[in-house]
Amino acid sequence: MKLHLGSGTNYKEGWTNVDIDPEVKTDWCGDCNNMPFPDNTFDELLSHHSLEHFKCLFTIVDELARVCKDGAVWLIRVPMWSWGQNQGNPHHYLNFSPETFKFFDKKKGIYKRGQTQPYSLEGLETHHNEQQIVFKLKLHKDV
Image (cartoon, rainbow, N blue to C red; front, side, top):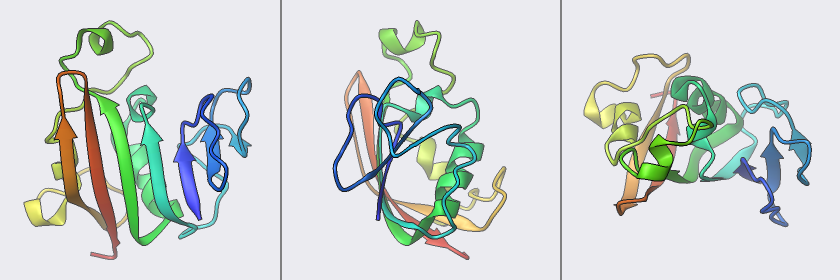
């Protein structure tokens, strides 16, 4: 199964589309920090400009790690911290740099700080420009 986090108006067939906005078409609408899905449900995660809307990165990443299977591939697109439209957006709580997800990678040695369960996010690819960053990550559980 595939999870589309913060789907907004971009409903994707073949995905489980989740969003907090009751005005858009979803498969589940609510607080994505506490989703009703069983542990180890999803093989793939897509998040397109949604993580910056959460108040705590550790909380949402912990929840995503819970609902995703070991080996799940995550494709995450977020605004670059220094982009002017990101800095001025009152709906953005989090800022990201190309280094952000290195803090969740066991190989970097600092991945457990703030986490509530054992997992590591391996960085497969990172691409960025002045406006956004794209992370391709692989989830490893019970590390």
